[in-house]
Length: 234
Image (cartoon, rainbow, N blue to C red):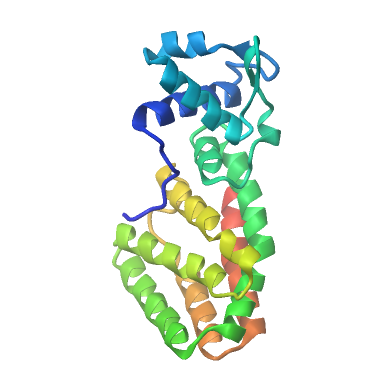
């Protein structure tokens, strides 16, 4: 499946960053406590250069604060760059995955219905036709239980709505929504077979966009995200 993955400077650097971030998320490294570059070198059997890059990457995401003669000080996850794709990926791989998905679904509920309405207003004829085609593919793949193909089209459907909304802020969230959709699948929180109601709601969004009906697009998209929210709270 073609899913969006977080940026990885190198496998070694990324693995070390992820491990240290998960240490904080899982309470093994308490916010306020520090480790040194020597600690990173020894733990991951790596060079000083790589240890420095690990520190810089974590600092750029606000996972740690670096202080001279102290080291890397763990920061509370509530202060991390919450919308960064790498941070989202790490949180979805932690024991906080449900909490993260709930918060991201609340974000989707605030953003995606309005993005769908805007896309219904602004989408070109070619793009309106494309949404109808994607909805047809979702029905075919969903009912035939071709889950890999279904999820690939589903990601295109949702990310394109954000990108085609003529709202730059919505568009910047397309990668975030991509990560959320892929993450639900990766951690086993997507139904083994798509619900017929979900397929029908995607068709309703596509039809509303094709008919340039913003209100119906908004309502149908809200139904899609509401269904996800209900699943998480079940």
